[in-house]
Length: 590
Image (cartoon, rainbow, N blue to C red; front, side):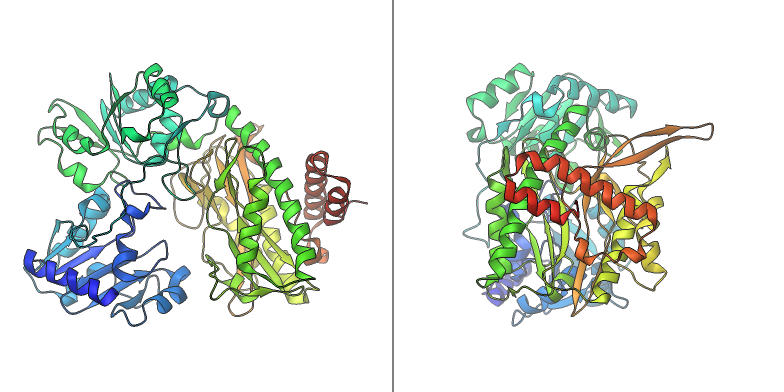
């Protein structure tokens, strides 16, 4: 099937005079998770990982993806005629470098401009032009994909202000004020989580992300939502009318952009606006390039949102207590697979108040599967879990109150000394982030070393970031803040919710990751600086059987004891007597 699709694409390329075609993994909204409508890359390649780019020429084809998906890509590309290029590995050419060698000067490369941001498109164009190759926009997949899914039509809902903590009118005015500071009076908002935040709307158009497929055109006087009106209930219609938000059909954004006054000053977020929309702006419009101000406004949660996170963590923690009690009993009696674990955890979470869906696909990695950082269990290849070894479980939920993301690594039998040492090294880094106090103006990359120091001293390392931003009943991965080695200019500010998740992965053996969500809060003020610190939001015990207490300092021991006491005292009132006793044992409370 894949070889047939590749041939159809090559035939279309020949007719259009195109020498190479690039198929990315995103949608017109620069989303991390995309609706089935825009899964062009899986359709043309058969590779279903969340990240990757396919490039097709008349005689060759390649898939570029990162280390999370090397094994999966090898399996799914077999017999397809598509070669795997391992991104991030020394010696692997970039897409533009590869095309520069495959094509001659004067040849042409195309990409669907709706699926590339302005920044991505212009960078690719510059890189190809060095080899004398032209890049232009063309959608060759849609005419070939006969049974292509439609844009989702799920109804959206209003997120009540008792959860959002701020009115739509207030948010719009704050965004307009930020636009004016950049000298702009118009902005095209295409990022789905930004639209959901701005208009206090949520939906189910995209797996795991409670967003609504739409656009917003915001000016100094008007706010227009471009959306399929079949998604709008009477409640949503009333909400938008009260907020002064106009509506138009989803596809009409492309004609609306062309009618923007040439006297307008349009703020362009080049990392998120798709190139097709950008190219339709009238020639005389002044373009102001800057990150969308909504990014930072959305990242700094208000007091109502933070309280919501705290409530969601209680609900989530109770579900996890019940799940892990079930797991301990189940694996001692009957075969339980990684897929069973994913299904049962979802069932336990779904019983919690205000639960809407999972916040991402659960990672249930038993033994060496835990060493695959973004492992996804499949029925055909998932392991059976026994009462021995190590299980890495990374999961989360979407609640009206907030979003959760937690990783716990647990020993299902007696752990080895090496496993306990690895776990404790990761725990020390996790505690170092959780207890950090840092001056105002500090960036996440300046804290990252705290999580890695003890690992590095033993020649150990992990390849992923230490922390990512988290939305409020929104995307589990959001920016602009993070904690990682990359240089990110975003300062950590009060209200930002971030994950704290160092790890260690031994290929063929096991994986260890410990993750809580933390929120930036006010610290002390001294003659030297104003300081911030983190409040830990997540509520579930670490595995005391995996901790080598001899490796912990007295302060680290005190942190674990205090955290476990808080976990127990907060969750116990919501548990029955048997569950309370189980949790008391896991928290080592006498």
